[in-house]
Image (cartoon, rainbow, N blue to C red):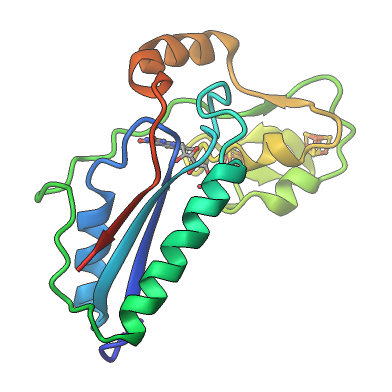
Length: 182
Ligand SMILES: Cc1cc2nc3c(=O)[nH]c(=O)nc-3n(C[C@H](O)[C@H](O)[C@H](O)COP(=O)(O)O)c2cc1C
Ligand code: SF4
Ligand code: SF4
């Protein structure tokens, strides 16, 4: 990527727990590539693994807020009020990603249609044998569960219950979308 001083608006979507140091990491990456980071948005979406957290979000109120953010950023850019001095929450060095142990597997209702293998972003599913997930390359994005027409794919119920208990406190309170301007 070459930014050539193009203005960049950073968008971080997270599952109602925390965005940790994603802003600082993204800002450094974009600045290194020559972009001028002028605004940032943190937006809430339903947790893609433990879907009871932030269920149904973004909802109508979120959509309105995000549309208002876009209008604000646009008017600030048009009036020349934004600069590359954008101060964002986060730490340097960034918090290490420790991985997510949940890797979906196909159950008995799998018809072998191969859709999950086609849609997996990292080719972790063998199309000839979809019940075989390469757990090393799987990034636990849960896309294969979402697209399976038979609802045949799932993660370990025990791990899901343990993860839900661990995240309950951090994920249960209502969190707002946030807009940061330079
Ligand atoms: C591997 C993985 C790690 C995640 N880590 C976090 C996290 O640290 N904090 C958080 O609030 N949500 C986390 N989530 C939830 C997602 O960020 C959130 O639900 C997601 O952004 C939903 O929309 P998207 O799939 O379009 O990004 C994680 C999801 C996955 C699959
Ligand atoms: S999408 Fe579902 S039914 Fe189709 S191969 Fe994958 S697990 Fe099996
Ligand atoms: S969870 Fe994501 S990365 Fe893992 S197998 Fe499913 S689609 Fe691929």
